[in-house]
Length: 156
Image (tube, rainbow, N blue to C red; front, top):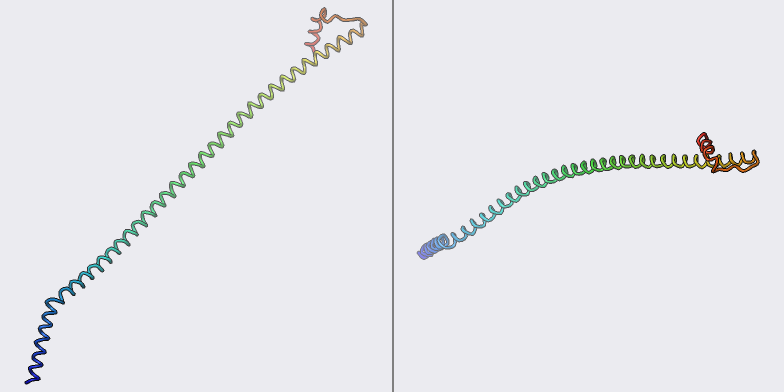
């Protein structure tokens, strides 16, 4: 009987220990395991949200880059058009300035030709007077014959 009593006592102690464990030890362990499982699930959900947000951010970045490229291309095209317009305007201004300079040079050349003709007429008139003076062997009065000399200069 001693063996049976020991076995019975061991069964009673085992059931008391099992009851104590199920009443006081098991619930905090299960609660800790549940909390840990919940934290892991929350972490995985946060990781999924982070991945989704990252994908959305990458899409926004790609859209912004495309918009920036388009705007840059437009600005470059506008700058090229402006540069071409400025070059064309400069060419036109240069043409106008060149025409004005050429016109001024022509007018200056014409004035010089006129002056040269006048000087040449004066020299021819002086030579004619000198020649006539020598032919006649006497002095010709330029003041007295001014009308004659002016007609002679006009004919030249």
